[in-house]
Length: 417
Image 1 (cartoon, rainbow, N blue to C red):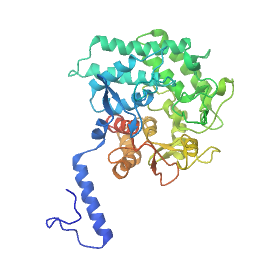
Image 2: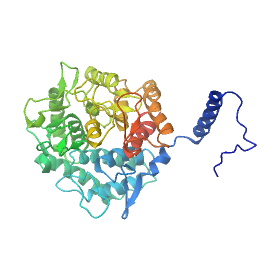
Image 3: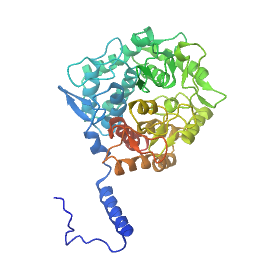
Image 4: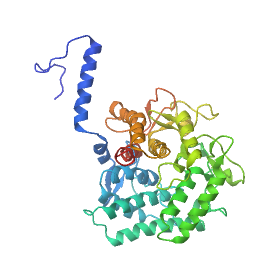
């Protein structure tokens, strides 16, 4: 029962208003700390049933289940929390929707066909599948049927073989073994906002994070098809030669933009972080890796997550406000995304040799401030986005699966120990 009356056995502390509020706030924080992190409880809200199988809702109150979001989020929501059966169901169920190597990026609510408009959903599936199969194989309490393991592995290999041969949406392995994608100004990457039918951040060509995902997936599937592993090694060598922007000291965001050889986009965006952190295979190492992480930390990282474009760029937008037109132009042009904290923090720790001290420092400097937003704005959840400019007000969907999932992955896997 709620009441405006103060119970006689719960007298307010003495002092002025500021002191009373401070004492009550600290008491509430102490009570919450005793309960442990609320993130595992928050994870329950996103794992739901679709028919007879589990799936992940991308966010509340308006998203359904999205492919890219599902496979990024499940590493934290399911694997970091021990929900292996849910992960199995999700991977097997999504495998049934594979067409020409592609996996859907969105399942509509009712009655409509799934939408195939993503280059990276299938590549994130490979990473999630690899993590799941590794955990399932080491957990004696979990029995994975051989048939399910074959289905999951086959889905991974089919995706990569189709991509290598060339499939829909302009997705094809180029002569240099890198992955080209897109037609016209199509929006196949996670930066997919469109206004009046046009891409706000056109990234047709060879986007940097798509190459990181592609090469990572090829290497992960080397045991199932050695030819894929060989392609991965070749693409890795080309990647290091082609993507390093010597004059800027970081990676190009897109090379051969618009499928025009030599047209390279040097916008400072966070997508390059996946070449250092967030995936099993780290593509960039040494001084170049440190340079990328340091530059991103200096210009992109905020307490609420990572900016999608560096301040000062012509397209930069500091606030996600206004009508749909203005909001969509800001969506990936500065706006902060909490889920990117996962790849960034893993990259930050890796370039410091993943030492226990680096993990403790990363938790204090990056994860703890992000979790504060869950305590103050999200009722235990983390929002989809936040303003790029201070005070980084949470915006968009107030409860987002991959925001919570990546925070859990950091807390329980990357920064554990």
